[in-house]
Image (cartoon, rainbow over all chains, first blue to last red; front, side, top):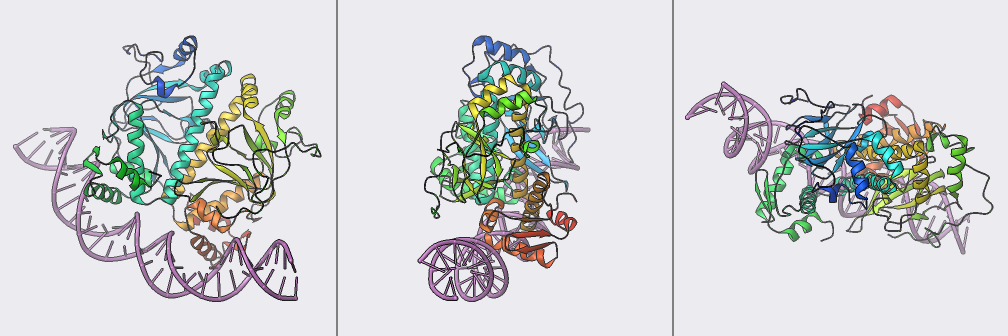
Length: 252
Length: 252
DNA sequence: TCAGAGCCTTGACTCAAATCAAGGTGCCTT
DNA sequence: AAGGCACCTTGATTTGAGTCAAGGCTCTGA
C-alpha cells in the first residue's frame, strides 16, 4: 500500500538470466523438499527443461500480484516470500510465508488469475514452473500428477491448520506455533532448528496470526522472560523446545 | 465426542445401493456446479462409469473420519455435510459446510489419509469418486485434469477467505458473511437466495466462525432487531440484502 | 400428551487482546 | 556522523467477545 521503493521493474516479466548458475533439478539440494518423487532421471530432465530460473528478486519486490494472469507456479530457491491478499476495505491479510523448497502460486489455478500477491521479504530466487507445461507433463507422468495433487492437498491441510489456530488459540499459542513451524521447516532444509533469523517483520507476523504488532511484541517479551526464547530483534534462539511446544498447546 | 446415537454402522464401507435411482452425471441437475466442463458426452460416460452412488447417510452419520485411509473424494448429491478436525486437545474445529454439487475429501490426498472427518448434518446422498480411477482418467482427459486442479485451487482460495474472515472481522461480519455465502450457493443451485433452512446448529456455526454459541445467537438477535434477517430457529429469511452486505463489510 | 434432552436465547460479569500513546532502537542515506 | 524513518517495545485504558448462569423452546419417543 505504502512502500513502493524497490518496486520499479518488478513482477510478471521475469527474464531468464544468461549468467545463471548451472542449477538444475537433478543437482538442486532442495529437490528432496520440492520433488520427493520416484522420478526417473529422464523424467527429472524433462521437468528441468520446462523450469525457468530467473534473476533474484530484491527485498519487497513482487513476484506476482493479486489479479495478474496466472501462468506459472513458483518454487522458492533462496530467501523468503510472503503471500497476501488485500481485503475489500483495503487492509492486508498475510496468507503464508514461503521458504526455500516450498511452492507458491497454486491459488491462481482456479480462476486463471492470481488470488493473492507474493512479495519478497528479503533477496530471493525462485524457479518458475509454467503451468501449461506442467499439466502436459503431468498427463504423461503419473508420479508427477500425483505429486502435484498432493502439493495442493497439502496447501489445503495447512490452511486448515491455520484456520484452527486463528479460531481456537490464544496469542501465546499462535506465536509459539509459528516459531515451531519455522523451526521444523528449517530443520527439513538441514538448517538449525533452534537458531534462525526471522525474514518477516512483527507487523507481518501479527497480520498472519490475526494479532496486532503490540500483542506479538508482548508475547515475544513474555517468552523471553520465561526463558523459552532468546529474542534479539529478528534473531531467534529457542532455549526450551518443550516449553515452546507446551506454550503452543498442540500436543507436546 | 458425545453424540453417538445414529452412529452405528456408519462410515467407510458404503455399499452400492441396488435400488438406486437411474441418476448419472449426464442427467444430474447438479452437473453444472460439479462438472462445469467442456466434456464430450463420451467423456462424461467414462466419468460416470467410475462414480459410485450409495445409500443415503442419516443425520450425524460419518462419511469418513480423520485418519481413515484415503480412497475417494465425494460430491454431495443432496442434503448437507460438515467437515471438521479434532484438535490435539480434543476440541472440534469445523472447517467447512458442503451443499449439493460441492466436492469434499480433497484434503486427504496429501497423506493418503483423510485430514478431517465428514458428518451428515441431515439426511444426505453423495457420489463417491475413487481417486485412483480419477487420476487415471485425468491423465487421459486434459479437461478433467484441469478441472480437478481448479477444484483444489478453489478450495485453497476459499480457505484463505475464511482465514481472512477469522483474523480480521468482527462477530457481526463473520455471521453476515456466512449467511451471504449460503445465500449465494443456494442461488447457484436455483434455490431461493433469500429464504432457506440452515442445516447446521448454532454450535457448528460458532465453531466454524471462531465464535461461541452465545455470540452467534446474539448476532442473529441483533440482525433481527435491525430488520436485516428474519430468524425463526433454523429458518432464515433475508429481508435486506444490502444491509446484510454492509454488515458483512466485504465491499457492498 | 407428556417428559426429557438437546438446542437456543438472554443477562450479568470477566478478561484477553485491541487501541491509544509515547519512547527507544537500529539502519539507511547523505 | 547525524538525521530521519521504519520498526519495535512498553504502559495505560478500553472493549468485544467469552464465560457463567438461568430459563425457554422444540422435537422425539413412550
